[in-house]
Image (cartoon, rainbow, N blue to C red; front, side, top):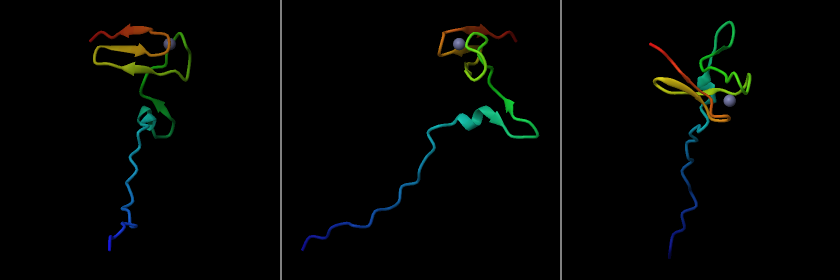
Length: 65
Ligand SMILES: [Zn+2]
């Protein structure tokens, strides 16, 4: 007799979306990432070590230290 495995271990869902990391919860919602000046509010720029880059329009803003 072959046993069929009916019991499956419930997989722990990992949140792929980490958009919540863009926000800091406090008295007011702070945006950690800059929003694109070209695309406007709501379009966040990707955070790089020396620059911010908008994936939508390609706008890049270099940051000075
Ligand atoms: Zn943009």
